Image (tube, rainbow, N blue to C red; front, side, top):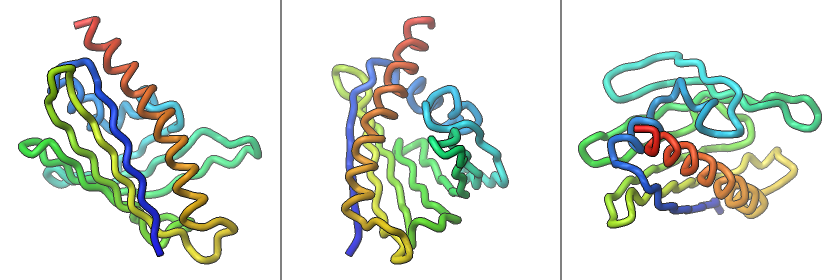
Amino acid sequence: MSGRTEATTIVNAPMDLVWDMTNDLESWPNLFTEYAKVEILHREGDTVRFRLTMHPDENGSAHSWVSERTADPRARTVKARRVESHAFDYMNLFWRYRQVDEGVEMTWVQEFHVNEAMSYGDEDMANHLKKNTAIQMAAVKQRIEEAAQRT
């Protein structure tokens, strides 16, 4: 069994701004509310390997993991995967950007399987990710739209 989530939002901003801001990994702590730090480990062409560190949780634990993202600027898509993560056997992500009348339709897809050693399963994780994705998409949308108004 595996889990999958998909979420879409429309960002009222130019495509280039949406693309640039969401693919500027170093600025993610200012774009997303959950990330405290991004460390770039390796960059080759459109592929970036990086470590994400979250803000500490209620117990003071700051979770981190290594991911790899490959952006395709011509297709306006990004494929990503967690390289290092104890909670998942795998976590693959796909971002799609599409121009629509209202702005840019941005879709995030997450496909994963929770490691059997965890105290929760794919369904629990999917529910958590759905809630968190809604929060993060709203924050990203707001910050990009604010930036669009300043330009």
